[in-house]
Image (cartoon, rainbow, N blue to C red; front, side, top):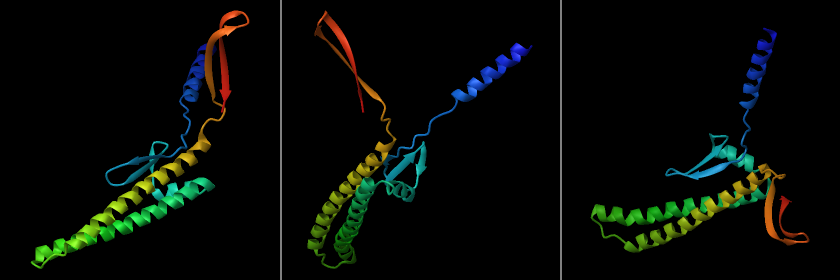
Length: 163
């Protein structure tokens, strides 16, 4: 009976130990229809929390700052461009003579805003990438297998390179 109890405890303990999972501290960024979504440990993380985490690393903090400047410029130009497009449309709907030059300027502003928005996403992705590098396994090795002639004839060698 003692052996059965010890066996049951050993199996139960092994089941608990093997159920442990490691936490994934890396941040992942996804583009959605409504904006950008951040995920860490399979849970959505708020933008302010991501910015707080990125500010702990100097280089990722620099790229995060660049991203926020690009985002601000994108929003300002996008709002201005939208107004300049909407104003002539409102004039047309009210029966007045629209000034289509404003709409042309608004389209140009929206194109520049799209460029700043792209730079925002690129800088933010770079900041997250730099932040995530601190969590990579630095002891992982890369195996390189070589076949060729050596002192003993035809042979195969395996070389390990550490990061």
